[in-house]
Image (tube, rainbow, N blue to C red; front, side, top):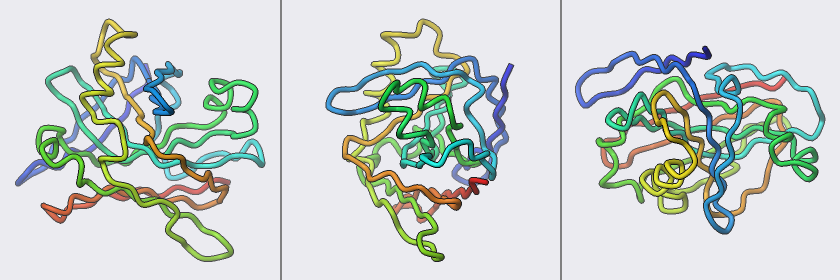
Length: 199
């Protein structure tokens, strides 16, 4: 079974958590919430992605990691895929590259009340320098509870699953060998960032 290890930032401490990923779900929000089940092995916290096509690109997302419905963690994610392949088959394009998530996460219950103000950003190397590509807030994504409700309609068992949620706004996919994703809580001042290379 595919396993993902993360460190959860608690209010005054931290805890290591292992998710034995039995399911991976992608939620697209255009124009309604569409649920796509993907192979669990696609989830990774790696800093390296193998390039297998020239038309790869990254899009900003967030991930919910569920041990069960009582333990829900939130982190930033990158939906890396092949955009040309997606034109023929969305699922085929999504399966060509992994779904990257950060190694650190927050408990949903610690940030849920201020979800709309949580900040998401992505950067990429463009023309030899790192540039800000996307800057979004939680209000521009489907909320975690809304995402969870649509997943309940297609999955009976919500234990040990990862849900990757894309925003309700259109993104411009950027092809780059260096990508960085981040989530920031303006109330606590805490941030989580993750970078990866495509080689």
